[in-house]
Amino acid sequence: MATSEVFVAPAGLASAARRAYEIGRLEGALLRGAAAAALAMPGLLLCGQRGWAAACVAAFGLVVAAGRMRGGPYEAGSRSGAIAGIVPCLLPAAVRLYDPALCMLLMTRGPWVCAAGGAAAGILLGLSGRGARGLPFWGSAFAALALGGAIGCFPAGVLGFSGLALGVIAGGAPVLVSRREAWGSN
Amino acid sequence: MDAGGRAALQRDLTALARGERSAFEAVFGRLWPVVRGFAGGFLPPPEAEDAAQEALLRIFRRASEFDPRRDALSWALGVAAWQIRTHRTRARRRREESLEAAAETADRASSPEDAAISSERGAALERALAQLPASDAATLVAFARGERPDLPDATFRKRVSRALSRLRARWRIPHGNL
Image 1: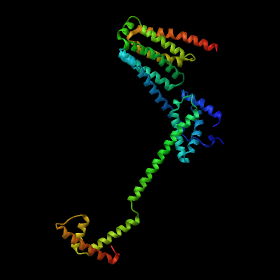
Image 2: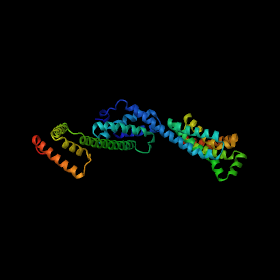
Image 3: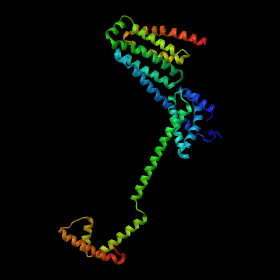
Image 4: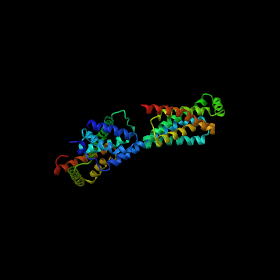
C-alpha cells in the first residue's frame, strides 16, 4: 500500500504551505536586495552626486529583490546583471580611493573609467548569459547592470553613461557571439 | 519512496527552488505522505499529525534555499527531523510544566475531608474556649495571635500555662487527648 493512500493532507494545509513558500521567497528576496544595495554603497559614498545615485542604489536593490521574488529567468537575469553591474559601479570608487586626482582626471578627460567598467561588465554578462534567451532574462539583466553602472558613472555625466553603454556593447557582443557560435556548433 | 518518485521530487523541488510555482502541487503531493510517515515513526498519532504539518510548512518556507546539487529527499527529511525534534522538546516541556503545576495545586488545595475535619476542630475549640473563665480565654487568644498584654513575661507565661491546662481538661472530656 502506498503511503499516499494512507495520509490525506488536512484541508487548508496546501494553501498554508503555499503561503509559507511565498513568505520564504520574500525573505530571501529582501535579504538579497539589501545585500546588493549594501555592495553598491561604496560607489554612492565615494563618487558624489548623492541624490540620483542614492535613487539608483535603491532601484538596484529593488530590481535584484524583485528578480529573486519572481524567480526563473527574472532571477537569473537580475543576478547576472547585478554581478556585471557591480564592476562599473565600484571601479570609479576604487580608482578614487587609490588616487582622487587620477579619478577626476579620467572622468573629465573622457569617460574612460566608465567605458572600462562597462567593457568588463559586458564580458561578464556575455559569459553568464550565453545560454539565456528571452526578454525576462535580458530585460532584468540590463536593468540591474544599468542601475549598478549608473551609480559609479554619475560623476562623469552623460559622457560617462555613453562610455558605459559603449563599453558594455564592446565587451559583451564579441563574447556573446563567439559563445553562441560555439553553442550552436556543439 | 521509490527511485522514480525520488527523481521526480528532485526535479520538482529544483524547479520550485528556482521560483517555478507550477511545481508546487507536485512537490506538495510527494512530500506530505513522506513527512507524515516520517513523523509517525517518532511521535504518537495526534502529535505526529501536528509535527508533520509544522515540518511541511518549514520545508516550503525554506524551499527557495534548496541547493539542486543535494538530494531533495534527504534535504526535506533533514528539515523535517529538526522540526520534529523541536516539536518533541516543546511537548516534553509542556508536559513537565503541567505536571509541576498539578503538583503545586494538589499541595495547596486540601481535600473536602480535610476541610470538614478542620472546620469541626475549629468549632470544638471555640466551644471549649467558651467554657473557660473569660480571663483564660483572653490570655489564650492573645497568645495565639502573638499579642503581649501589659504584663511581665514570667506572669504572662504562667497565665498561658494555666489556661492551657484548663483547656486540655475541658477538651479531654469529649475529644480525648489534645
